[in-house]
Image (tube, rainbow, N blue to C red; front, side, top):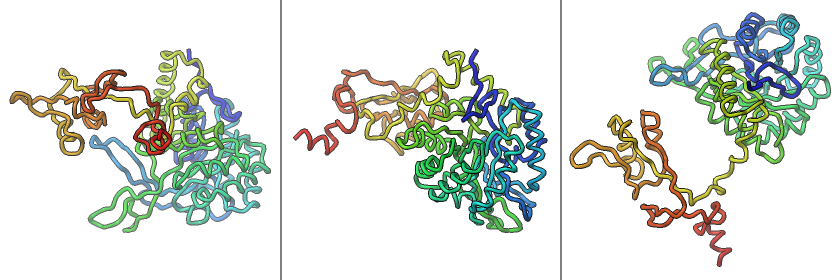
Amino acid sequence: MADIRNNFVGIKSPNPFWLASAPPTDKAYNVIRAFKAGWGGVVWKTLGEEGPPVVNVNGPRYGAIWGADRRLLGLNNIELITDRDLQTNLREIKQVKKDWPDRAVVVSLMVPCVEESWKAILPLVEETGADGIELNFGCPHGMSERGMGSAVGQVPEYIEMVVRWCKANTRMPVITKLTPNITDIRKPARAALAGGTDAVSLINTINSITSVNLDTFSPEPSIDGKGTHGGYCGPAVKPIALNMVAEIARDQETRGLPISAIGGITTWRDAAEFMALGAGNAQVCTAAMTYGFKIVQEMIAGLENWMDEKGHRSLDDIVGRAMPNVTDWQYLNLNYVAKAHIDQDACIKCGRCHIACEDTSHQAITAMVDGVRHFEVMEDECVGCNLCVNVCPVENCITMVPLAAGVIDQRTKQPVSPVYANWTQHPNNPAARQAAE
């Protein structure tokens, strides 16, 4: 049977599924329930320095985006770091780690960008026996206005500086949590590595306003008639997170840097996709908040079953396996040709493929044949864009069929050719044309 035990920068857990730093990890009660359900580890909700307590709003804290079936696609939150006092959190962390020694307990931290503040809190966390720390450089709301969170994460020089402080003042592994609210995710990752970080985790939440109440003209969630930007998370952010994880994993300067993936992970398949792109484990938040802690049992069983089916013996067999296939557009094979094919037995005659192609694409799908409602791909017009596949409500009704080399493409009237490996060699590329001349 597949071995899904995880060893992430020396932090061991029985599986790669951790709860991310968020409301589900705010106190011992929640964390113990999570461990009983089967979670491999947690990142304790972000602690701040001793002093005046953090005060959260006492009204709605979440905005939401739903699909047509009311399925939750994304959450926007305006909640701050923990509002429980530091000493209470530290006592609970110590007790939980003592009672659950086989589980990963990492502590998220956010204090002012002053070395003394970090030097003061690090030994307190270390004394709990925690397995590591995660530097919260990601929160886009509330704390960033106070010079913390994404206000630090958006400045590579600050990231490197704080990481250096932490590495100089603790024995614990340091995981640097990155904000997606930046143009090039590689730059903060490089800065964290330069500072000596043991790993990075990403993505934190995306700066957002999910909706506006058109009766009160206030952004949601509304607090006494006012609203603010918050952090967006959930299934909707997964594509952004996948890309950013891949960018770090394939960057020449950060290649090999351990990555803890975060962002819309809801199923075992989501986690496997992130690991295939180079992540060493997976952190989950919104899925647990939507479906409860026991969702991890489906994740564990699904991952094990898939690995058994595919012959993967350990997580090392899948981590990074997709990276050789991630490239830049210029290296794609422009001679690869695929055409859409409609399974007439599966087709429900809804016409969505036709209208999408007719109105917004390449007019390559018929609507009527001999006066009968019938949808079929006209190969001589199809460019293989696969829009029809994506709008079809019936899974696998429309598929993309690659044309073999040598077959005549009815649209171009030219044989499909494997001669040109990528755009850099293609005769339509001006640089290639000039070199040929």
